[in-house]
Image (cartoon, rainbow, N blue to C red; front, top):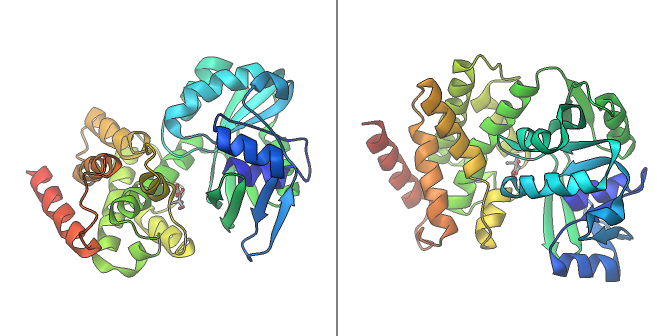
Length: 314
Ligand code: KPL
């Protein structure tokens, strides 16, 4: 996602990609970024890339697109590269990212949004814009006005708007991610499978619905009906491989803790049972460690998950 946003924003702003992965930094420095558009056409974009945040200072905007377990470190890097009036914006999945940015930068220098843009890194320095989506930023009283960032994103070609209900936005995206990401990771299927297979669809919608119940118990209003939206996103991104599926396939830690883990913890705090999210969390943790049996068919894995959920309810 960092490469996608960096590539498109570089048409309208000065952009530096900041990261730690040596192969990616080397490829970007040597060859630039190869950008493959949704229609399959590709071109190369020269982009500055560094591991040292100080070389990107002083920046007006730090777009935070790391995995949620790297947010704290990214916040420290943002502190080094931002101008005193610069703002960090998280478009990450999961709960708790804005809080971590705010702890380091202060509330008038951190904001959040959500995006349904899809991207896949095919190789170091090669990104595919897998599907166009919509980006929504929260209204906030920050040093750089959210509207200014909306206009920047729009100029770069991202459909972007502002919304007042920041918590609703995050919990809405959380519901979609809890519905789609763990199941695609455990079943190793593209998002569209969850819309086509009746059992998978049922489980996806139950997981999203649980998130909505936990949100409702905290008086957080979702901007849509969670289960319906999860289905709509699975259909709209049918050919995509979710970020969590890509993480499991590549042996990387996933964001399950900030997604289902955060839902289970919040559910416990407000007395809402979350057996579906709890079972999906365990299943993804097992998949991360390669314990989940690859040889099983999606149908067999789904039956097992349903049985585990029934057990978790008792
Ligand atoms: O946010 C996503 C992700 O993969 O992390 C969705 C919306 C599920 C798209 O794949």
